Image (cartoon, rainbow, N blue to C red; front, side, top):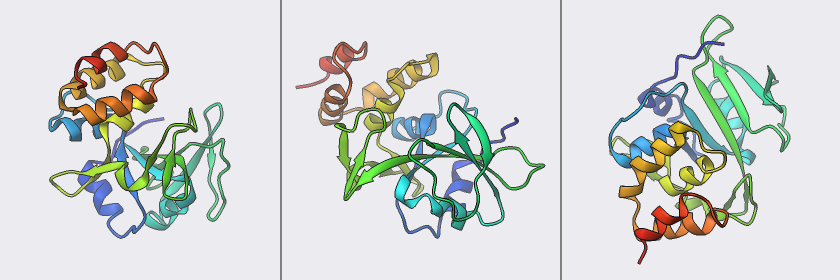
Length: 195
């Protein structure tokens, strides 16, 4: 399955009319926080709250939407179908002949709080979940994105952590250190910058 990721300006244009919260996620969110590109990306991730999942279908009415059923089997996502809590990803493309362009990730929310997938005790006010780039593109706060990347880290996750660490302030480092499980290998580096 080939990917030709949409550019960040293209994602912003496609979602310009969406009045629900959404954020660029993944490695691109880290690059927006750092202020520079530093690695290649195989796809572009956009985070939506699970309760707002149909914003994908409304923003991209002529596109194909495919739900990634665990353990990663793609299937068409029917218009209006409510995806269950076990489906966290939706792949989208303009047509059956086109490459995949955007991957949407779905996270839980309770009231005004985002709830982490892996640990429902890790929460954050939705209003504090993201930032806005100089170009006006919403992106996931780096400490929240690093939390998502901290489980089963891959080389690119380690690269993202190393690039983002210098831009995290004491509050961000504290939040991430508290959210990570005890003994996580990133804890010592996060502790060095906390006061």
